Amino acid sequence: MKEKIKKYLKEGVIFIVTLTIALNAVSYYRSLDLNKDSLNIKSSGKINLPEQNITEREINQVLQTAYNNASIPFDYEIIHTIPKNFIVNNESVLNPLNINANSLEVQANVIAVRKNLLSNLRNMFARLNLNNLNFVLNSYSTIFALTDSIQRKNGLAVINIGAETSEILFFKDNSYIYNNFLPVGSRNITNDLALMLNISVEVADNIKFKYGNLLKDYKNLEHSQNVLKLESVNETLNLSNIQTIVHARVEETLIFLRKKLKDSASINELNSGILITGGLANLKGVKELAQKVFDGIPISLAAPTNLQNRFVNLEEYILSSTVGALNYIVNFDNRYELDSNKKLLSFINEEIKHKNSTKNEEQSKKEDLKLTPLKQEPQPKINILYKKLFEWF
Image (cartoon, rainbow, N blue to C red; front, side, top):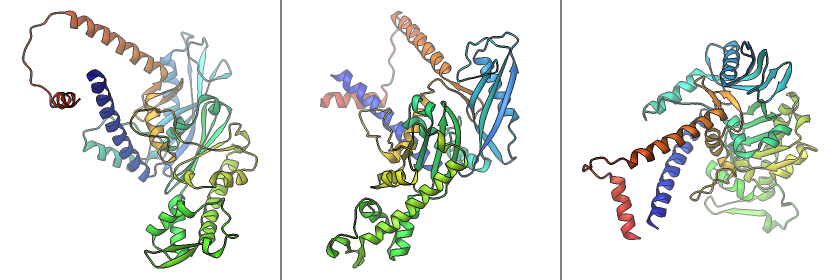
């Protein structure tokens, strides 16, 4: 019993601390709006293979070549080098590992962000003595909280409508193809309500989700049922007016996003449909409205479900970005890319780490069997806390 309590307490503390750091980091990260200050640059690299065998070293080398071949503005810095596809023996492959060939080529998306934004982030974390940082584009990491490899292979778009921006990302053949954004989010709906109805922003924000139902027919209700009384300001509002304002802004946003997908030539390849997430996914009727705007394309509302734990419910639309960032770190899902420190990230690295961890555990067990002189050491404060908790139980 005590061992289980100790295990759960330790796991809970680690999880809560990690989640708190992630929430705060992602919150600050999103406030800087890296998506609107990012560039998606197409690049490519090619190397010869004297040994005619593709290993992790050759994959790293060809991605480094694509990184160096990318032409970016002087005030931008690369944070991702993401392969679109590898070419081996004139054939496109997803995973070139262990293939024999004379040359290896890669077509990649290179993501660059303004240097001053990254500098602000580095300075913030430097005050916390955290200097080994990696940056990930918000719209890119979000997809790993919501989708599986089959969806990403068939063709899928994720629309993340947050407070200030609406982000869109398209995957096909398990490759990141396209991303874009709109400087419009649910806060614009709040501002529209406040302006059009002559109410405060705080009041408008409260009634946005509570009464902004896109499915309900307020106009055919009796007058008494179609009126919202605001006791705080001693005013009455027509619910159909609220619905009209919300509907107009959401429809406009979806139409603009549809145009961006159409202009990118991606809209005809959405075999797995479109996933809508972010805070606005909580608005009743947004899925039905999107089905009308994206005529004939399957629409789903998506919340993260692949980070299970015993402490906090993360299956919330608003947490897709946070869970995506966490999942991006721990699960590479048979993919390769260069991170913002120009290091190769791959599932191979994770296997190596696991093997090394197993070896270290075995070595530690062997050392534990050796008798060593006992010496008194000060008891850590955390152990004192555990001791007290065990006494309670």
